[in-house]
Length: 409
Image: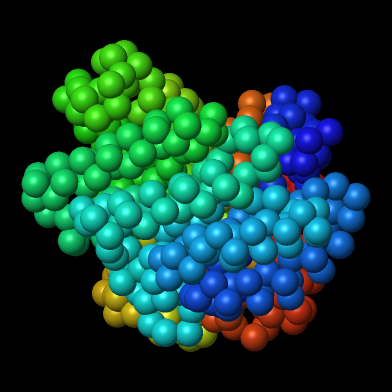
């Protein structure tokens, strides 16, 4: 059996090509030397626990700096040897955070540079070039790269902004078309809807793809860049550009788990990758909520809050913005918070998690596979309150993967 054909995710009846991993963005590190040290420290230990007999997939996170350093042939060959020696294989890359992601405040800076810029395009092309090299040589198959969904919503105000980011995405798809012609490897870029981003809901995703990505004009532009006919250009756009469905983000947006899957399928949009993640759920907001939520208000990441009251949604950029409204109304309201918590935890003391959303989606996935690529993503380990970090990181990641595998069977 070719390396990469036997993998950690058991062969599901309807999803024999499903790959399961965790995202290495949980490990701090921006330079390749830092990334490489963490991979050496954690990956063999995790594989030993969750997949001792079969190859384990890797969800690699590379900053722009690390990607540039890894492109050196000697460095790349050393990493490939490490993967082979430890029976590991890379099938997906997280290309969302371009720069620093741990230890310093990133907040809305994590969305920049966005898809209006040449820097974002060049970085993502670079990731695609690396992924082609890293996919198992005997089974090139399919690889995915997740990315920022356009950019930070307040930054994208004009129609010219949308035209610009659409053009950059077309340019990247053209790059992927050329890569497939040269190597036979199919790569897909996965836009990851997130609260307060240009694309944050399923409805906004569908509208963007219909009005901009699959439009006649966009197909014509890709055709001119690649020499494809109009019909083939549209097929290439659907093949190389899709969504990364992050289950925390979708649950925080109060999406209906099965309805959103149906809508994406009916629109013929590829779910290139699905991130298994859970957020905070506060079914009844009370004055005591502030005291309970304060430990989650870290200075590093943006933790958007969505409020539902009388079936209406209200959005807050970060936890403090929501807390300022605690005493402004007595209406019953529910909050969901974009703070990734371990997926195996349903009870969080004062809160619950959106774990049930994951269960509903994976139940559907067992019957009708949603995506070939499944990636557990709990990157907030370093800022989790101490009460949720009783175990070491290897044990926590192992529990997340084992819990997810249990849902898949």
